[in-house]
Amino acid sequence: MTTPAEPRALRPWDRHPHRIGVINDFPGVAGSLADDWFDGIRLAVDEASEHGLLDRPVELVRRDVYGHPYQSGLPMAAAYRELVAEEQVLGVIGPMKSDDSLSVRGEVERLAVPLISMCGSASMVGPRVFVLNQGSLMDEPPFMLRWMRRHGIDTCAVLAENNQIGHEYLLGFMADMAEFGVSVVSLSTQVPVDATVDRLAEEFRRFAAARPQALVYLGLGHNNTRLNPALDESGWAPPVKLMTTAFVTASMGERWANALDGWVGVDQFHEDNPEFVGFVERFEKVYGRRPANAMAPCGFDLGATMARGLARARFRMPEAVADGLERVRLLPAAAGAPGTYITLGPWEHRGYRGDYLVMRRSVGGRTELA
Image (cartoon, rainbow, N blue to C red; front, side, top):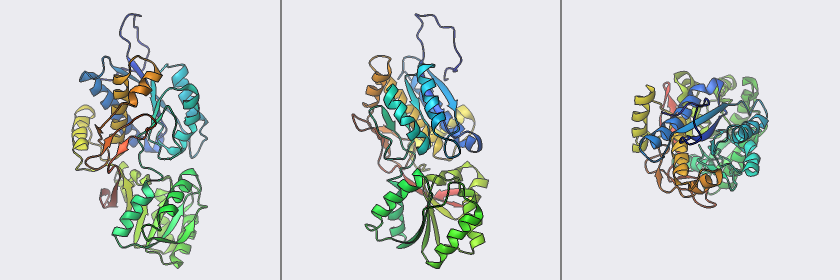
């Protein structure tokens, strides 16, 4: 099992564990997803040690930190600095959210300890920055547009939150919609990340007047529990309701799935992916639960990738781990549709390849493939 993060009485000539930092920026209300994510990481590094891929255990040093949208990104940068300077980690996993990950990027470039993030922003790049993106702010728009075209949808109203995530999503959506024959007949770009039901209903009444075939939500997901109540208040029932990977909250449990009842969203777990099936079985044996969400397999993929970076490092320093990560090839992924895999390389630091995105629908208190 993973070595606890408390100091241990090791002699200088003992084999010291690999120390890896983990920044969890989803404490609190999304704690169940964050726990699945962290336990996925832990399972991956434990298996790497137990199966002989690594010559020693991995010590995960976890920091639970609040950041965007309610605080600044400074706590994220401080957590990374602390893990590097005080805990002397060889690499860092996290944060999860794009805004929080971008807040750390400058420190990664300055301190040069490799970081693997789930960030979906195309701006999350750098010599020591690696990404296994849980969704993508530029990939999701054409993925959604392709789904819309297959279902005969050619007009939509777009609610893009007034933040970095909403704006980058919108940039991708507007760039690709002509190729898929979709027109935006009504647009909102001024709704905050925590809009009131009344504020959302005001936008939805305006959207309804344009008679679009679909409502498209481009945002972080903190508005998820208010979207359906706002539609009820507005009196508008759009034929189709689509959203980005903000949809992952529907996997937090029946209450959260019911909050998004009738919505179709981008997600990243697929019940028929054999890597996911095997992962869930092993996860249940260790932790006693079966996660049906994208966060757990994404966490496992992050841990498995970092473990292979450690295994390929020629000496135990961060620059060697970064070199090792660049030699990860054709690693089967637990996230995504069957056949998804992870490959990294020099200046090729975005790992997921293949059909790593899926569309799911929330219905009857659960989600299913759409």
